[in-house]
Length: 390
Length: 228
Image 1 (cartoon, rainbow over the protein chains, first blue to last red):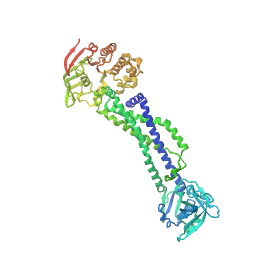
Image 2: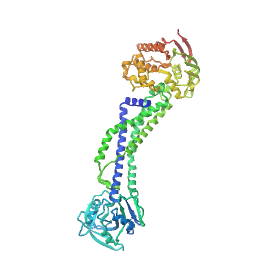
Image 3: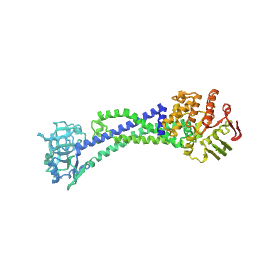
Image 4: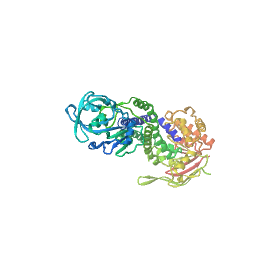
């Protein structure tokens, strides 16, 4: 309590020097929290978009299906088992058949994934209802990225060529019926969505599927014969790892900010001990122990961190609240970032993030404040009283 | 019982590869209520002796017993406790804490003693009244004259009413009038509170007031005079 009172008096007395340090530290707090909030928001938004549009409550994969191995697609299909058919009938699951195909936009050939989905499904956020309309050609749904890369627009026709279950090539004319605006790249780029029944008929794979997406309301799914259940946690592993790796690279800014703040505190402490040698001697002469003097100086340094929390809160909370409400415009180049990103990114802040950052900065400030004070323990009070460092 | 007992005290300092002997075979006793001074030119060892009595330093040989405690055997914590409870220090350059007000400077020793706030305030105001500084309670040391600063330093030394006050050249930076004021007040304190004062000085103005004069030459007691 005594040290706290004295440290406060000393900080108040130090005037501008204190406030400059506090300003630098508070900036470190606010920028670190703001920056980390962006990544938390990115992860939250990315996960939500992927869950809504791609994975829902989890997926059953045919035993041969490997999304990272295109050569597996030919063999990764099978009849929907009875246990899962009942889920599908209850609208708690929706099957998707995945086949490789080729299209010929603007006279070029392009390999695509042909995905059959039930037009009436509500489990994924894909606007598949448009595939249920009567058309003069096979109705095709594509994403905006796919539309941009192939220069296709609603109402355009394209030739689709595929191989059926026997390996025989066949072709059909498709018509773009809708361009969906999804943030999930993996259901957009290089993909054509068509009615499931049509694709099953085209490929001779009646009542077959490659994956079966389960509703978010269905819990505790287990493997069913040739179908392996992949839960949300597994299906989100990639996005989590990607954000983690991006967070690590972004932590360079974290370290630089922290380093600058620490440098300010360390410099102040070293200067303070050098300038206040006589004061240190006086404090000891007046009856303070060396340990008390060290505590006092350490506390003075650490109190910069406490004051910085207050100052940071004054301008940081409105700033962070403002950005978390209006979001930040994301440059188009970030579409190549590797995962779902909205046009506006809304940072997300949690109590754990704020408390964690405050604790890390406070711990670092305290350690940095303490290090130079160790010199005090080696000072002879008689020398210190004369303003000398022994 | 003597307040301070010094026996065969020797103090050496390392000086390059050799050693410099600052105090040689000192034997002294100070009784309670003494108003005494260690007198000698610069480098005679008077500040070193005062520092040892004040438990800021330890003897190289011999012993110094202050208020029944052997200085050479005290830990840092015990020495700090002895200083905070029983001793007051007055320095040539006042050594006031620059960011504190006059009140806070005088209050400081009582804060270390963890004295309750109400009692603390009363003692601080009493001490400042003794020294005629009540109109400067909110001033900072930079706003005070030399004489005023030293009066605050004296108030800080006596505020806890210690048994022993050690004053190292207290008037060296003061003019005649301020020196007179300070010394008069210290004499009054000595008489009224029976506080023991030990000065280290070579200032004639101080020497005139002393009841006991211990002359130190080259680290040795050359003369010990008691004035009746």
